[in-house]
Image 1 (cartoon, helix red, strand yellow):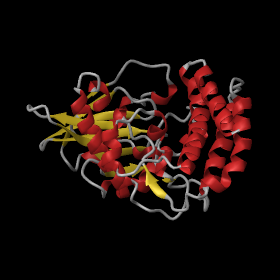
Image 2 (cartoon, helix red, strand yellow; image 1 turned 30 degrees about the horizontal axis):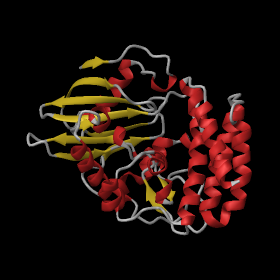
Image 3 (spheres, one colour; image 1 turned 90 degrees about the vertical axis):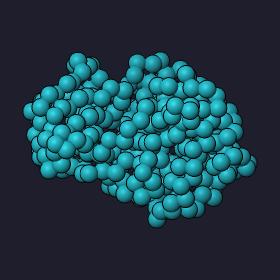
Image 4 (cartoon, one colour; image 1 turned 180 degrees about the vertical axis):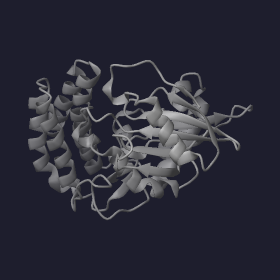
Length: 327
């Protein structure tokens, strides 16, 4: 079996295990489907480490994903991501063939000190890699189709607010939002972050004043949590028609307000999406909540700025804008 890995990277989230461990996982999980021919690491991710596994006799293709190495410092909102994904995988895969269907999740870390999952390959190209070269109409085709998948996701009702799986469950949307912000501020202090922490703490105080508006969201709906072109596979026909083949990486899913999808807060999404989605979050209460979600995500990316070597000034400014708007 040929094993092709990328060169060693300093980024601790994507440290390759011993190749023999990869070989053992593949032989244990996939030999019943065929003869393993190759394992090839996939580039482009920033959290899990992913590999394409190709089998022969008969031919089939699979994706093996490993959770970050144990020494990786994850943030509060990233705890047990693979366990959370496993809890909602069947819900997502029941919504259509564009959502990956898992063969298995191994979460006990008995064979390797990382959780792993295996899914059958969904063929397609990453939209993000080709977005700039596609025409406006082709991109709008994809946004329109994505809105239909988003609408399906957001129609699924849950029994609690919060992250799925082993995470805390909340009866109120406001309590979940406050809990995440508390966890992120604790992380910032634990990692010795100074820039933006005072602003994040001021934002947390502000949340108590807006509990009632947050709790107007009284039904938890399934939210994908990362619904943007970097997680969308598509195909382009010879005619130029584009269609979505895969909606990936539901590990950041949560139960809550669909307006809290971070892509709705930060991305410039075309009108074609909203027309097909059938709803715009533009009531006065919606706009207030979206500002709160902006403060939440700016607090989150303040930590990510430290992880990826950015200054954090832009993220701090984002929190300041929320404080000015809501304070």
